[in-house]
Image 1: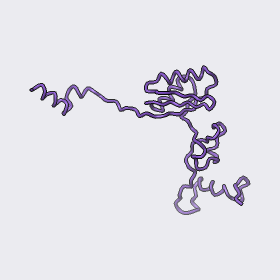
Image 2: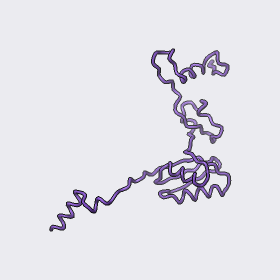
Image 3: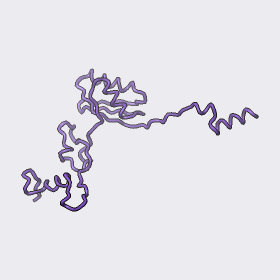
Length: 160
């Protein structure tokens, strides 16, 4: 009876045996998309082998034409990037989104010649920031939006 009581008190209070166990926080299943420049089958195999051997990786898909690598599994994005960089390849988190998901896909920060067809660079929405003190205290963002449709600007948009 005494042994059972001790065992239960250890469980409830967190005695000697349970204090030694440390539980790691379980990583969530996620999809990590990277942009990695690969020119040949050797480059592709090097990246595929490096990522496939990572703990927690479920699948690795590579689209060499778009320089896109998709990794699914219980991994952290920054660790996936570091693993690819360890192979000697330049890697970054996939910087593109479909052009129909961006508020202004043809704005200068979103336009990228290196983007695959149908994609633009991921940017925050270009919206004027409210200013204190009215139009005289306009910031650089508001000034750029005002001159975008100005008659004084030879490259301005014209609406007819």
